[in-house]
Each structure stands twice: as structure tokens, then as C-alpha cells.
Length: 173
View (spheres, rainbow, N blue to C red):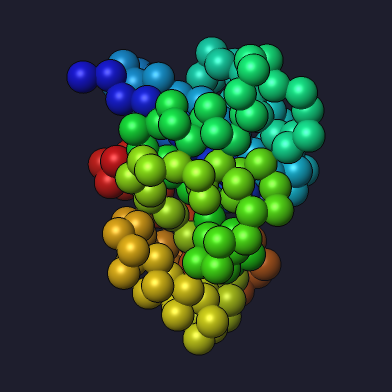
């Protein structure tokens, strides 16, 4: 069965892993659309995701939509499942409190689809009380959290906060 997967990519070095997640989904016969934060575009270009998904990539909240409906509503209603991978501490906090200040967070607030998040951040950020409280609140709302792994982090430290591998995130969908 073909699923409609909305991949939400945030500004983390782990954004490169999201490209493999798209490949896995497309290979499985799923349709994938990608929405990125502007910060995510600093790590991986929209062209990468457009090429792999074979769909346009949404980034700009204020770009006129290709159709008559606002893009964040059209994407929110299109999706069977939305996966935020990587999910930064910033986006997780915005999701918890309903802050919709970019195309990605506006889309997530508007969707009725199942939501999966794959956190990716420094170990201190992941272990911070605020992040843990935000994740607990999202879990209580039915959001599935794919726990991060432990190991070497981009900042040079080692600990828990590495985004789960794409195969693990894909299985969670």
C-alpha cells in the first residue's frame, strides 16, 4: 500500500540522514513530499530532496502556492503520516506549544496525520529538562518518538542525541 509521507526536515547536521529516509520510502512505493525549514537548507539543499522524492520541496511560507489552497493546509491534509527527521530541540518545543512561525511548524499544527519525530541534538540539549518535558507532552498527544542513539556527536562530544538511523525511522512509520 502506498503511503503519503510528509518528511519535515529541520536545521540539524543530521539532515543528511533524511535523504536516505526518502530513498527508503520511495523504494518501498511510498509517495514522499518534503517540507524544510530555512535552517535545514543550510545543511542539505532542497534540490537533493526534490531529486530523491520526485516532488517539489516546500520551504518558503510566503511563496504563492501552486494551487488555490495555502500550502501548509494542502500538505497537512495530503499526508497519511508526517515525520520530523531530524527534529531539533527548537522544533520539538514549537510543536509542543503550537508555535507555527514557519511553513514546517504551520503544516504540523494543521495536520491530522500521524506524527513521528526523530530527535537529533547535542546530548546536553537532549537530556535537558525542557526537552524531556516537551517530548513527554508530545508522546501524551500521540506523537511517536524514535529515540536517538548514543555515540559521537557532531559537536565533538559523545552521548545520547544522534538521530536514529534512517532504517529505524522508516520502520517506525
